[in-house]
Image (cartoon, rainbow, N blue to C red; front, top):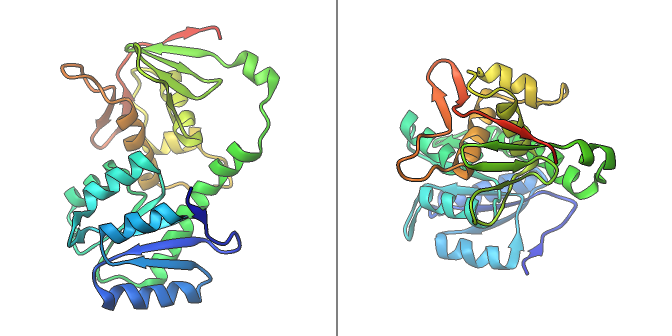
Length: 254
């Protein structure tokens, strides 16, 4: 089992083949109280991940032994550690691709280190409430009895356990944010929901949630609702409008 770096400071793994970027950035982050490990390639990254758990991974897109986009997708599927992509590419297509593959943020070179620190802290803030809630909150017996199940497009969503199931496939566990977002869509089927409305419906009043954060969570939820070949996409993007769950929904008592 990987060891967890100090509980006193957030841990960051920097993966970049350029020593001129990697080493000064590590020094800068350490000055801002982060615990930092570095790797020059994908092989070094995987080796460190066998030994340690990290709060955030800063991942260069162009590595000598791996494509950063593919590595980001593998990280999301295997360990779901937050990833901030670091790259010289700055096209809209690249940014969208990175977010769709599970990246939590996207920073282009050259960058201001202070901005990267702010983005790291933002990612950590977004992750902490969900982790803390899963670890510390006791189940509410009344809420559990009232939690419904939703049937839609061949899926069954159990709100009590935050799980998706279909056919004979193993159930898929959703994160706190993903389950909250899905329940909003299920309560408003076949309805166009602008980003601002999704932010209002899924966020606590004291949390700073951006359009980009909503886009990222929708992308993650869409991946878990991946449709079978020949089936229409369930979570549809309406350009300039927002998102829509294209399915009828049946509410089932738990």
